[in-house]
Length: 224
Image (cartoon, rainbow, N blue to C red; front, side, top):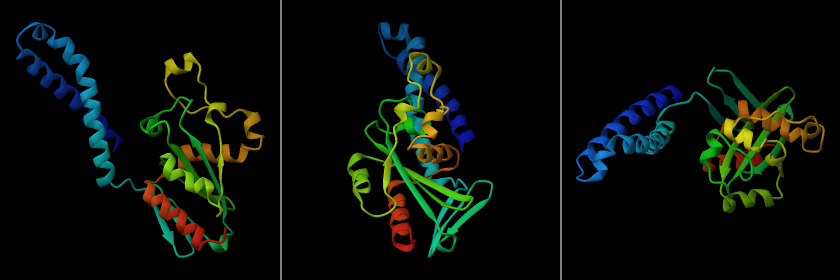
């Protein structure tokens, strides 16, 4: 899907430039004299808007090959490569849940497109050497009930501001995942940050309704 999005971005840039230039050249006055420059500046935001709509549509219609399946006594996930992890009550599942807000640090990718006042909520289920991670992004009014819930797993807050480099130099080079300092890993939040690092690579991003279904399932059907 990423290749398709890139192709659509390239095509939309060209079409937006040509469309804007034609429209501006048709306008009488000084605007037509600067049609080329204005089209160059205007094509990018127009194409970004188009790609946002296209990507949203493709995500709904284009199978990713990554699935989360709720079982009667557990959960199973499958990656694009076809490898699967299945955790059931027989494997003594150990849960871990954490969350963080999206303010005050340099975000990238999907997180950059989420409002700053939202939260990322993540859950890892682990049994021996096997584990799976799901996560979602929620606005405060939907996230707060999970923070206040007395059911397991309880959500623990971590603070990206303590890990991400927010210097001016780093902001100029663009967002990237940080190296987690040793003092963070060995501290009380260490297990959560190690799980967060796994989330970057292995996590399954769920829409809010599906995340709620996942949480209700594990809280109701699994002995956590």
